[in-house]
Length: 496
Image (cartoon, rainbow, N blue to C red; front, side, top):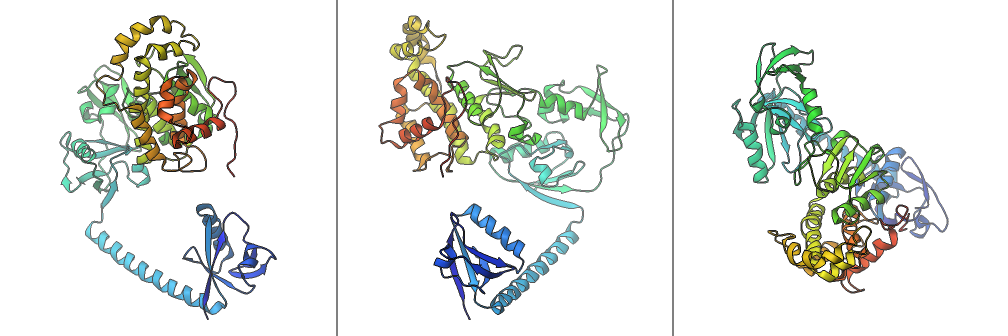
């Protein structure tokens, strides 16, 4: 009695039928027939994972295996006895694990019945609002929410350090962990807190910094109403009353500054690509960061209205600006970072973040500087719509303004950025590493677009020869996208 392992290709039909876990039919000239699978065999494992006798479980396992790998390894048994033995051993192992887990759980509960320790990464927004050492709110769909943290919990320790009610202690511990790039190991007390009482006073300086944007720091507020859920209304010295929901609503609509992340990420709203129905883009036709954002919106098919120039009435005086469903988003890097969650369905990885930072804060500025310091290159740009004056002013711009572009920044040579990009590409067709371009690909292509449209020499300097991997990548992208200066959207394509 022995088992037989057979490797199937996910790209073709397997060619056999099974009832429960037993092969009942093998189609002629199929993969199964060519691999000599026989009727009467029993499925033991799929990609190393032991299978039950239930057909629905095997269906699910095969579907997952096909989606995640180009090959699927199935281990068969010639008799039912072998799978019975395997499942028996598997059941015993599960029982042992359950006994051990139950033992540890009882031990932990006896040690700390009302305490809970939770580990969070400090790299992204946690979604936790606290007053002194008490959790005041957990933002829906945030990491804190997904970890099960509840409103009213008390923060006892952070990374082993005891927390007190003293102002700034918790905030300093959070900042220290973020600075040192350490995980936050937080010990909470989960006992029910005492409710707020009418007449209690609250100092706004005890509220996290981002809530102070709309309210004077240190202003005294009084609890004037306590609701059944424990939340309360505050009355300020000027007589105005706000619930904390009001404060959050006002805060979430405060635009971010350049280089400042969003207080509440777009993905925390639960938006999908279909939710982006009210988008307005403010910008120009030739600005590289503007071209980057336009290219991204066009590629993903996001409908948007265009307003040329800066956003009227906004204190943020740069471009581009995006209004997304009532929220103003500034800084093209922040836009890409948060749109990735919605458009690609996942956050940027550490490598993708490094690529985007290099594009936004290095390559893009270096390309602008290269053009701004050349009279000839500026004159090429003058052929663009609305930029005819550039050629007349080119000598002045090149000598006076050009050297100041990127001043104080540690910029590299264009060819060095090209080499970095090739290192990231590593022989892949796209920076996404997938069959289709990802948001990094679209972002980089969008940055290159205005220079390519003006026929600036800096493009050839970056992309290299026709055999250069970066040139090949650019040609592939060019064949798949319609220029933002042309009518229409993205060309549909299929790599299969």
